[in-house]
Image 1 (cartoon, rainbow, N blue to C red):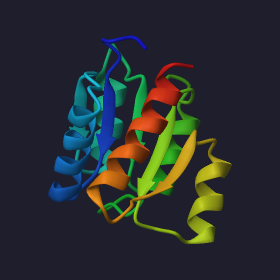
Image 2 (cartoon, one colour):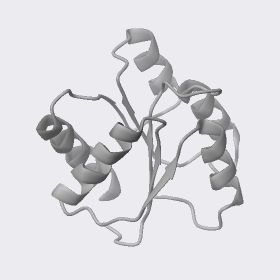
Image 3 (cartoon, one colour):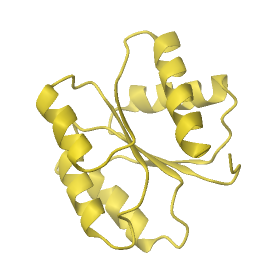
Image 4 (spheres, helix red, strand yellow):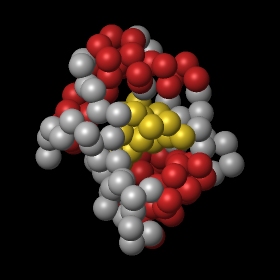
Length: 132
């Protein structure tokens, strides 16, 4: 894993942001974490950046622009289309899952209710994706 490879978390819920931060810390994942509260903010950050993140963690239920709409925009953009994305959401809807995989996400994780289960899920997929 490249230590300097950053992770972009697109999440509007403050508690979920803190939970991801705690999960990364618990498993000694020291990659820099950038946070965007909306999909439009994330697109602006990505388009203006010279150094793209190694991984995007994406919630689907976001204000103004949904996570699925974000994925559609991301895959249309030649600069951003190859970014690795893991959906990290509370939605267990089959339609959401199918839509996310149509846009070639690496994985789709329904947020577990316990911190321990959440931390384990985050650790497994992040290490797996970043070590590829």
